[in-house]
Length: 329
Image (cartoon, rainbow, N blue to C red; front, side, top):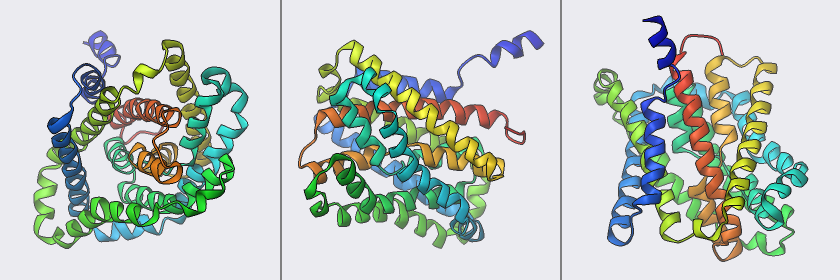
């Protein structure tokens, strides 16, 4: 019995298996045309449902507390828009040796982006982190990114036309109808659905996982159909994966160390790490069009590789911390 339990801990959990299967399906059976459009709408609906359910199950006092947690919010913003660009810039020599000068510009672009929203919150929920603070952190990061991302790109890429980038209204509207509005509606109907949500926590958790699997499949599928991966040699792809792993590891270790120095509780450390170390593909591609006027594969490919790497790493961490809830980490 003890030996079986020991080896069972080495097996991947169902959530991680789902991530791997989503990537394989996106690579082997990508969707296109009408089917891709349908998956796009399904992904949007899943994200809206995710935030509606968060609005239903999170008490107003918890949400206000998360918003007022200024140390956590400040740490996430600092990690996303200050620490990340500095680490990439200072690590230029090592990163360029892995990916080359052209693709390094893509990693520099990654460093300028805001945090992901839906996956950061879902991972935080699975791992037992501070979900109200994660909702606020991820949303605030996206809102700040509307202004800070073009400015950071302008500074780091020395582009004079960045100030004229048309990203503000579209980004704000997207965040509003996809995240803030469903969450607010969930809060409004909470008195009617809260008891149902408390009785069906497993169903809500399943929706968290399904949303992430769907995001992974649709993003990877789109890359396959558009031929982005075919533009890389195996050595370049391997270099991008290694560079992304190193970059993510350095950022997460620095965030984790800072959280310990600031004496954050377990739940707050988990939230800060997930929200402060991840970058948004969903925001990155539209912003690329707005800032550069086109989708540059040398910028898009590093973003897509980093996006997949962060999902895999964070899914493993979320599953591991889910199994150790109630213990010190």
